[in-house]
Length: 440
Picture 1 (cartoon, rainbow, N blue to C red):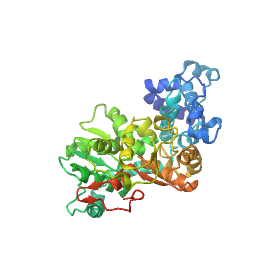
Picture 2: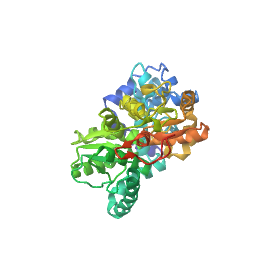
Picture 3: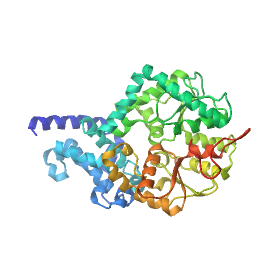
């Protein structure tokens, strides 16, 4: 590599990091004491105890670049502070470090005595790799597809509405009411519901909105935001802008996000900072809304409809990063007869290994499935037949773990369990026989 190219790469890295290094990231870069306590907290390390899987080791890769670019001593005598010059070889090595070996689950942060947020460090590494053309192609394509959907909405809107009309027929059959609707672009609705791609994130919620008499409208856009996984804040903001504009245009009071960890965390906690102001609407997860309905007696549930033993996987983004810990348990205690906790659980639960976009990256599937071993051990220890998950990425990963390790369980979402236990005034919602939760 020529000297001029190295100089240009260094300049680009310095400019990018200068924009990203705020007080939070600076603290994460400066306060690590290399105690190694984070090692046993990481599912990658527990599954495969190698130095490369220690969270502090991964974060140190960025610290080496950071010291060379911003530390006065690092610029003059890089060897004294462990600084490393920016190079193509260095950046290429970070792809495995940041995209394949870390889900940014923050279990290490919870266990760190210094509170070092390694997820922020890995996000910064991903941002640097994306800016230099090294991000996984699939994540790039998915992020661009979200933007293209908005730009070409007039061309695909009719097809989308046709698909929703088909789901609406299923809704009517399920609730026994020919007037039941899945409203789209409903001006003045109380709630804008932002689902994911797939009927499994739309139909169960539709049943529950119907059962509670909720005023709602289905978003034209999906909740997933792959710009976040890329560490590309401008692109992530643009993807979020679609939902903000739609919610503002319809005048809704609340945006409810489907069972998706990163989508909720992004819209609830990160996005307002990108826009520099609070949103003119409330943001909640469907999990929060379902728990509130149950607490207020708006849903009549018969838990004997879900009689097999159920355990619950705490999504890292919903539990550890967002504090939604008791809400899923309120739901499960109301709609199943045998709920069994994993050990550890709640904010200390192990990541399933599928977060941060990894389930979309086939090139890293071997590492991802191997990193899921601690989760498999947790699930097997409960003896449960059903694994409930409140995040779609988790559901995909748990489904693959189930097949790969032959666990013999069923993976299902919370909303589907609630729908299966739901009793309407006119009788039960049609579904399977009362054995396990129906997939709707």
